[in-house]
Length: 190
Ligand code: SF4
Ligand code: SF4
Image (cartoon, rainbow, N blue to C red):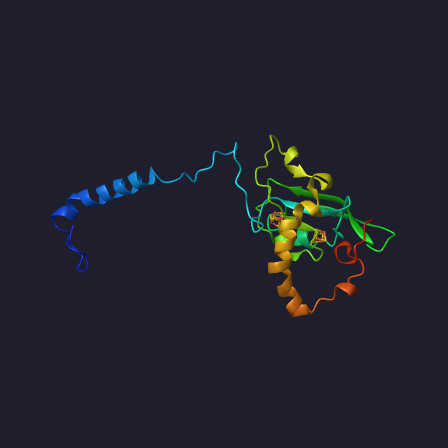
């Protein structure tokens, strides 16, 4: 094969590849005596920070979901994993999801549902090791999706710090005007 004009000419030792091989072996040898970073999963679980995007969950306060069934998350979800049915209530919240379902076989953990939710009602949790043995089990209904806000505190605080301020700056959002919100008005019932 003709030599390219910019190709570097290898000397004798370079052509034997002995030095790069020894270098690679030395690198491996060095790491044999360093502390192990591999976790013995599932016996040991990695503790993840609030920035991790685990399975999406519905935020509940005293057993009531924050969700006002606006449908934005279902609309934005790229693989169409979310399906819901909205219902009306007599109280200030006005709307709630009669049915809310996420097909976890479709979910790609993108976090867009959390991104668009106006009520911080759906957030990404720390949970990553979910499993199911058939397709039906992978459909998580409202009860399975609801997690109390106290258990999601780390993620909610993280969102307040890194996500919400951006919107606040742009729209000058006034919580007092958000009259139908469980999140902003501390409403605790349907
Ligand atoms: S994380 Fe992404 S894929 Fe999963 S439900 Fe939310 S929007 Fe859909
Ligand atoms: S979870 Fe949020 S975005 Fe989805 S329907 Fe409920 S309020 Fe709307």
